[in-house]
Length: 286
View 1 (spheres, rainbow, N blue to C red):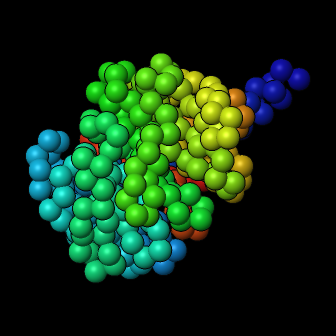
View 2 (cartoon, helix red, strand yellow):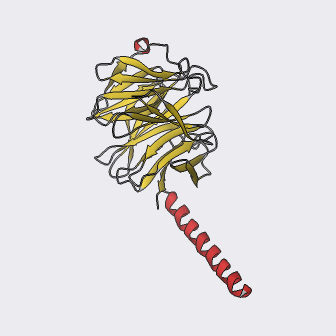
View 3 (tube, one colour):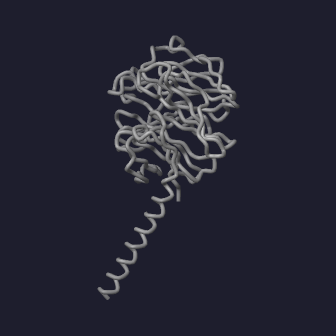
């Protein structure tokens, strides 16, 4: 009997190894040579937009690139500062660009949608962008000084008016909000904090901020899949996790800096910008 179980265990281990090898081979689908890629978003037409920061703190060297339906990479818009979070409303692409919000039309022409002076407080590090389901509002995270001070989340109407949703002055737990995720009702915003590594939900009606799960290191991107799982990236430790209620599972590690993730249009992949490696990786979902 012991011999039987030993053979079974060996066979199971071999099967797992072969499966892991197959997954690893599929994960090799990637775009390389990117200049500090931070965020990614897929539109319904099959295009994938990538924000490339370039050199941090150097104005004008940032750009948005696009992977077309043919898989080819090209520059969509250039001359930005430190572009990060992306959101699409209608045919327009919105970008969190350091201390301002940029709007880019389908021809790649851009203009300042919300200047730094329009915010209730001077932005320090505008990071992720998220839209509501109706396309009436944008939400942007300000990660503050990235050390636990000055964090905030703002709501932006389509006429460019900015209001504070939550900030550190109102709740000390708001240290460095990063990845944002709006639910289908428009009443609950999920976000991960870059400093504390905690995933929260914020109920707009009650104003209640709830700790959902912990342990995400430098929490960066947050996406929701139709399978019911939430996926969270950890920039500091190069990992991607799944979350179901308060159950956290490691999906993939080994990234140099897993930044602001997104789902592919067909829902079969998590798109992972590896900022330090200068790559965009298609991480298959099984």
